[in-house]
Length: 484
Image (cartoon, rainbow, N blue to C red; front, side):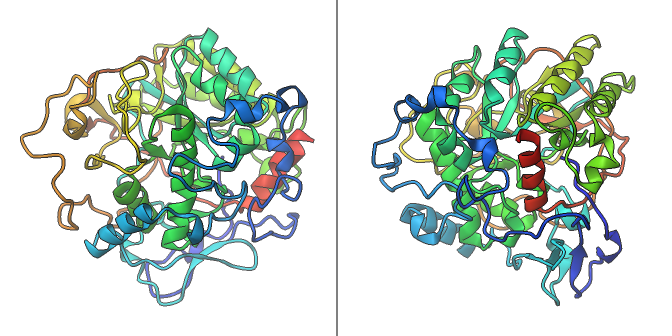
């Protein structure tokens, strides 16, 4: 989604409150308790089970009737915001404490929401190393660009009742994509998970948190629960440990990135192309919000026009596009966009195939052997990604040698051990270097890439990314309008 920004003038790197106000004057009051339950949540209809699937829901989700996960603990309540500390396995907490003690988790205070729903950090916060995407346009260490000639296809907010139509289309087109899933939505639409896993090849799955709420506003352990439990339920269903994470509304900073990467082995994935398809309602029309009524998301026609412009760009600069599997209009817009990409000379792939990265922490490609593990916690050092637009095999490509022992990697192991303890001096930089968003594109059917090597940043041209924030409640209400 394109984030709606109203007050950029307060993004100073000083010891003053940093405010980004994003509330539309026509928006409803902002609930502070997240998803909670389907019936109470503004977007609850998005996650409603179809009656035709209700009888198979429990049997399709591979977990015990007591809702106990493979880690021996019960899943948090669907919609809990966030999963409480009492839900966390001690082994997760122990690993967090280990990384915190090693200096790998920075001491950055959680952000707050102002009365209008804007993100702000507490007064006196030294913003130098916060590296907030929302407030500072900072994307250090994120996957947000693509190599020249490539397009990364990504979908947020699944699984939903629209997922089957989308996956069936992707399967027919032999097109891979990365789907960032909401943990609570998996509970509510568990039967739809089969569409991802039984696709040929299977769809690539990533983490979009348990509660779909702003991560920088959470405490460290709340972030751990939001990410960890979504990883856990995906692992319990597929046997694969997710390796990629997209923060809801792009709200991430150096602290959240560090918890994701150092504790859970997750790479942060953003985007640099967005047509506001989340605005589109089910059936017809758009959400009655200022950002939708006056922007690209005002109609399916304008969304498709924007998307097609990316495909027709002759610069060859790669990009990652953001889509949502939330309404029939959004799915139809994607299909038209995808056909435009297919008519051009683009390589259209999922996120890991952009740079020959592992699909999961225990599987290298879509079809290679899955390593058996008994926990979602990493067993290898995380990959440092400094240039997400670097071509496979280039001097700036990510070093994936820590995963060379996975079947199908095609990678030579590094001379240094991948099991060496990671210290703050060896971790990747989290300084708040501000980068612009590259204007780019890429396409063709996804391949199960078996090469893995670091890439070099070949995309020199970049454009300023619109860094804004639309509060979760507005987004949720928008989606609710779309499905009503």
